[in-house]
Structure formats: C-alpha cells, structure tokens
Image 1: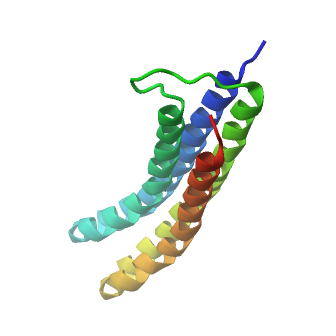
Image 2 (image 1 turned 135 degrees about the vertical axis):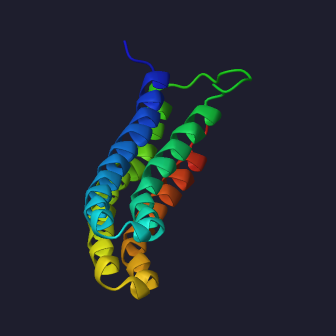
Image 3 (image 1 turned 30 degrees about the vertical axis):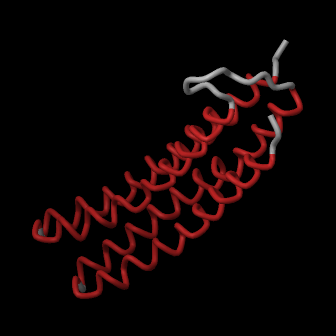
Length: 157
C-alpha cells in the first residue's frame, strides 16, 4: 500500500525532474542556435552563453521546490515527520505548478532565447533588448515557483 510519504516524494521528484527536463530541452534549443552563430563570429560567445543559460533557471526552481519538500518532511537531518495519504497528496499537488510550468516554460524560453540569439547575430548592440524577450517567459516560471512554495507552506505536517 502506498503511504503519504510516497506521494510527497513523488511530488518532489516531479518538481525536480520535469522542471529539469524543461531546462535541459530549453538550454539545448538555445545552444543549437548559439553554435551556429559562434561558427560565424566566436567573439559573441559571452552574449550567446548568457542567452543559452536563461532556460536553465527552471531546473533550479524545480530543485528548490523539491528540496523544500524534503526539508518539510524532515529528511535532511532531524527526525522525519509522519504524514498520512491526504497530506502526501497535498504535497504532490502543491509541486505540480513548478513541475508543469517548469517543463513547458523551459522549452519556450529556449525557443525565445534561440530567436534572441538570431537577433544578436545580426545586431549585437541589441543584446539588452534580446535578453528581455526570454526573460518575459521566465516570469511564469517564477510565479509557478511562488505558487508551489505558498501551497507547500499551507500544508500542515
């Protein structure tokens, strides 16, 4: 029989795993675009690297949420708390915003970063504006992390 701890750990794993997948995909998409630009102009490496790194934040947000769960459960030192199935399901569902939005926004931020890399290739003086475009996608990943943290904090264990 599955207990509450299993559901809570599943939530933690989904937050870390799905947001990490989104970041990996996004960083890969941006990296492909960046590699093309760098073959033509290696001097743009710093600007391109920044654009490629942006989609990596979703994985960090998922990792933060996953650790938040593990701390809440007392699994990092201290005494682990006992939780029932209802509490475990609450934790699982609380992790879904950062997990799902991290997965989707990581990919879309990678696509937007790739487009911005194309912008930098043609007009390097527009790097500041190019950063704003994928940063807009980042807003929703931050909001999802905030929602997950607020939901986790509302669960009594």
